[in-house]
Length: 307
Image (cartoon, rainbow, N blue to C red; front, side):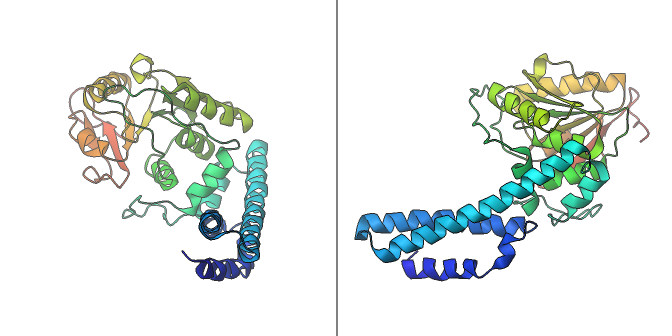
């Protein structure tokens, strides 16, 4: 990208006051990404062509605007965290708030969870009050590298699997904890995240503590060593494969012998789970890795449990 193009785009951003509206999370994120790119491009140009007053001015304007936009986000996200801590923004109020930032529509059965919404930027900004760590745990056979789920998946999971006071939610392979945190904030149910990477697990628990949440716990362990028998709803974003997945499925089956369970899956794991005979599909998305699939357990006779 040449300097003339960068200058034109920068002038365009400077003339968009809506970027300073705290609610414009998506456009602001795109602008910040461009400004970071522009600053790097200007420095690269200077290394090849020398520093000039024009490039110095462009760089200063790009970095100044990026800082100003980040400050809008910082203040907005901190205000949301305060509202969560006080209990003003949880449950149905939080849900209505989230709906403003996503293209997902409640109870619409055609949504593909592909790409990111402004909601993903919003949730990451609120839940990640400090920079998240990188995964460090060496992957064993059957373990899949951590990737975050789109936040629209959480909204649909809550829509498709109504939860009550007796439910217990587990996110198996919980990473930074975003899914578990959002499920707990939206529903209030007792929630566990199980994560083998100690750095990710500690970070997730720290974020829960920072928000003043007591009904959620992150367990640093291999799922195979954790008692998940009290779980009634499980979420898996393809955290396992092969023999390891088979061992986890056996633990889920043991839980289902004690009481009905439901399971939400997303990603390549879904068609595999669809082939498990003691589960049945609830929303008929069992062949599509880009949709949230929901399953429920059958009883010992093979008949399905009532909802």
